[in-house]
Length: 108
Ligand SMILES: [Ca+2]
Figure 1 (cartoon, rainbow, N blue to C red):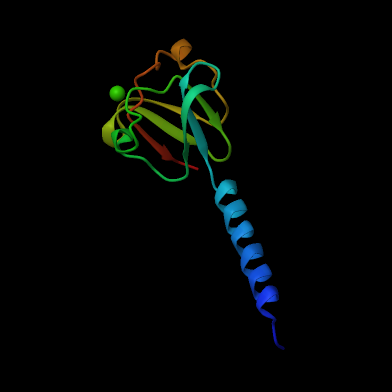
Figure 2: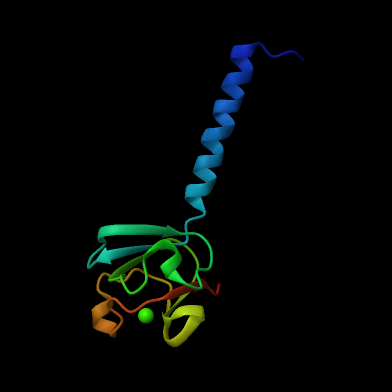
């Protein structure tokens, strides 16, 4: 089978759209700087032993859990107090974790 140039480009474009969609689907948790999912945010796909690397240390005030179960801890490398979340939290302050989270990992 032979592809025209346009056909090959269309296949490549399709593959890129698919890859982007697959990447979006892999987002596990979205962290927000403000209460109720406001302000600056980061989409987290993998374990983050030190949120300083993505400039989000001690800045999280709300979280949206897209998939999985996540552990959020007060200190880097999953130290200090931790909370386990499988659902959205609009105000981490209620749990005493406002602007305290320094590491995040997926546990399920
Ligand atoms: Ca901290």
